[in-house]
Length: 174
Image (cartoon, rainbow, N blue to C red):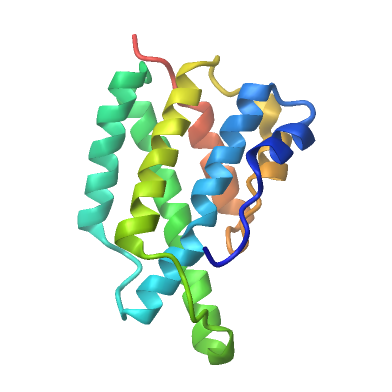
């Protein structure tokens, strides 16, 4: 990995006002987005575009499958994961633009997209859905905790707000 990931329990400890399940959820979302620097490095080094519609379809299809198994409404889960995908593309684009401007800052080593990153992202996606299924829907009153936890470099405030808004709309399956 390019940068150190925040340990889950540190974020749980620092979350304060959020329930421990919500703190875990927010940390999982942050951890998933932290991988985007590695995704960007791989794509930059291999001259691949940020947008990969075929891969996005795989992620959404897997989300729908995992959501149904976890007892999360698939439609609301899809909206949330689509927001995560948009946030991921924003982060990747930002990193690639930085490296185009400052070639000396391009990482020489990064996680392999196929063997390391994608399996980790799918695992985190499943953990996010399991955590969502084990708690009441996220309330707008926990936005400050979310914003304190999900603070990935290159993620705009607008994207964080959109991500949180879509998260509050995730519901349990009926």
